[in-house]
Image 1 (spheres, rainbow, N blue to C red):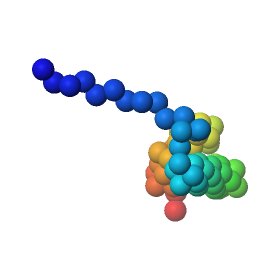
Image 2: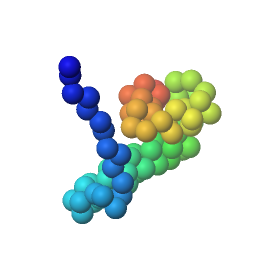
Image 3: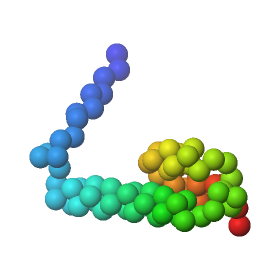
Length: 77
């Protein structure tokens, strides 16, 4: 019989200092990436955006995928 693996939920208090720093850095980087995409979208004329700006505003809010999608597919060069 296979041994069942249980995944213990990680809590902030249970994290090492290094893991906490890593988590904060990744979170800040994700926020900066999204903020850069929203700023670019706000300043860019609608005719240079592929699709509605309102839709891109919502898409950018999706973790790393949204801002990356906007920078790759959302802008017309």
